[in-house]
Length: 465
Image (tube, rainbow, N blue to C red; front, top):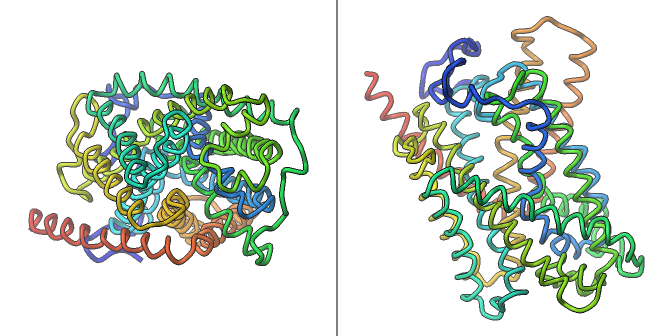
C-alpha cells in the first residue's frame, strides 16, 4: 500500500522525531503557545461556522424541508469523522491532521494527495465564499444585475483579504477579531428571533425535487457539507493543542455539535419566516428573514452589512489557512520549495497562488453561464474535502486491522470499527451526492496534482542520488 516513489518504513515514524513541518517540543515556535479544550473547541466551531451559512438556506430551499433531515444525517456523519480524527490524534498528536495520518500510514504519495486535495478545498471554498458575499453586497450596492459586475465584485472580495495577509499576521488577526464578533450577531438574531415569527405555511413541500427521499437527502447533504468544512481544525492544529491525545477528539465533537445546533436552528428559522417560493431565488436569505420579521428593509440592510464583514473576515482566515497546508508539505519536500517561504509570519507564495487560482475559478464559473455558481463551487469542495477525509478513515482502518502500536481491546476495537465504517461510508455517500459535474471538475484538479508529485519525487530522487 506504500508508494513506490520513495523508500519508507512500514511502521509509522517515531513520535520523538518530528517532521520538518513541525517545531520541536520545547522550542520557541508554535508548540510553546498551546491552547486547552475551550479554545480548541472554539477553534473548531469558529472555523465550521464560516460565511457559507449566510447563503445555504437558499441553496437547500429547492429540495424542501427534507434538507433539515439531511442536516441531521450530516451531523451524525460529521460526528463520526470527528471521533475518527480524535482517535488518530491519539496516535499522532502532531500538526497536520489528515496529511499526517495518510503519510504515516501509507507513505508520501498518500500524504501528498491529502495535502493537495485539502489545499484545493480551501481555495475553491474561497471562491464560493466570495460568490456568497456578492449576494449580500447586492443588498447594499446593486451588482447582481450583470454577470461581469458580479464577477468583478467577487474578485475584489477575494483580493482584499489577500492584501491583509500580505501585510502580515498582525493585520490578519485584527480583521479576524472584528469579523468573528459580527458573524454571530445576525446568526443569533435570526436563529432565536425567527422562532417568534415562525409561520409553518412558509415551509413549502417536504420533498420538492420530485425524486425519492433518499436521493434528495444525498444531493442536499452534498451541498451542506460545505458548512461543515473545518471539522478537522483541531486535528490539523493538534501540535498546538494542550494534551492533544485527550482534547482533540473532545474539542472536535463538541465544536461540531455546537455548530450543527446553530446551523439547524438558523435554517429552520429562515424557512419559517421567508416564503418558500421567494427563498428559492434569494441571494441574501438572512436579510430577507429579518425584513420579514421586522418589516421594511433597514433590518435586512444591517444584516447584509454584518454578513458581508463576516464573510470577508472568513475569507481572510481561510486565505491564510489555504497557504499553511502547502507550506507544511513544502517543508517536508512534497510541495514546490517556494511555498515554504514566509514573510511577516505569512506564507506569501501560498497566499498569492491561492488567490490567483480562486480568481481564475471564479471567472470561469461566472462565464460558464451557470445560474447557480455558488452551488457548483460548493459541490466541488464536497468532492475534494472527502479525499483527505477518506484517506484519514483509511489510515484508521489500517491501524485497526493491523493492530499496529496498541494492545488489543476487543470492545474498543469493535466500537472504533463501527465508527470508522460509518465515517468511510458517509464520505463515499457524499461523493455520490455531489453529482457528475462537481466530481468531473474535482477529479481534474486532483489528477493535476499527480503531475506535480511526479516532478517533486523526481527532484528529490535526483538530489539524494
